[in-house]
Amino acid sequence: MKALVYSHYGSTDVLHLKDVDKPVPGAGEILVRVRATTVNRTDNATVKGIPFFARIATGLMRPKQPIPGSEFSGDVETVGEGVTSLAAGDRVFGFKDIGCGAQAEYLTIAEDHALTIPDGLSYEQAAAGTEGAHYARNFMNKVPIAPGQDVMVYGATGAIGSALVQLSKAEGLNVTAVCGARNVELVKSLGADRVLDYTHEDFRQDAQRYDYVFDAVGKVSFFQTRHLLKPGGVYISSDLGFLGQNMYLPMITPWTRKLLGTRMTAFPIPTDIPASLALVKRLTEQGKFRPVIDREYPFDQIVEAYRYVERGHKTGNVVVTVA
Image 1 (tube, one colour):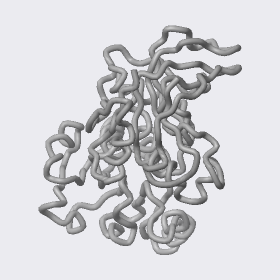
Image 2 (image 1 turned 135 degrees about the vertical axis):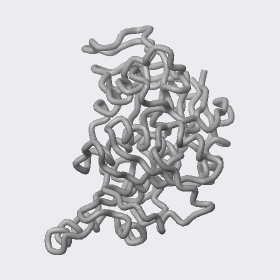
Image 3 (image 1 turned 45 degrees about the vertical axis):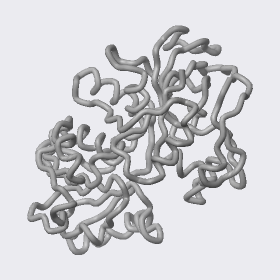
Image 4 (image 1 turned 180 degrees about the horizontal axis):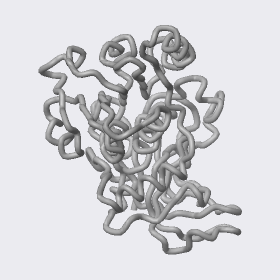
């Protein structure tokens, strides 16, 4: 089979298409004929081997998994021993945050990391609906969400941000989204109650106060946005921040909150992929979630897809059609 491979960490120059052996599913696994995959920020970081501590999972000096890719959709070809929820011929989508070798013609993955594709959803849409929603869900499950709360989503047009807008609306939150001028109408169509165009106004001067500020692209900080939070409000970012501050601030701000009644931070360590997949499927079937696709590439141009994502200006998801 053909697959995108890399043997050491580095820039997109380390990536190339190669013929490799087709995998065989083990017990509890399925073999999927991949129809579509994506290229996302996580994939780019994994190929570069950053942040360094992430190599505990991906391989210290060289990648454990030579085929990158974390999101996929396709058809179940065969199932391993003990698999009961899926069968050959099922249309499936799935995700694994440390990579599952999705950027290939075939992959194997644990049964509970894949679900059947909702009716009416294309392979491309299904592949684009998991990573951003998984991280968005893990923003929201770190705080006590309740209907009627006010949330600001900064970077509302990326994979995480566009999912955060939709998941927040599904929970009954009042959403203010921050994005550039060209995406204002898109973000409104996702359900945002207010949209701030950062190219024409400084969102930091907003008069409204929020229960939560969700920085979906990691380009601002707690110190830049804490005045936007209500007393006891929480800032969460998708990025480690300057000197890794978003990792250690959550250990400090709960104490300042108790002592001073001030704002706090949390870090969205992602957990429970099966629950995220189930949420994506349920909200999709209810018409409350749709993945945003920026552009599509054929499989033989997947390295170009990496280069595009690396520029940091994608809207939603970048999809690669494999078959």
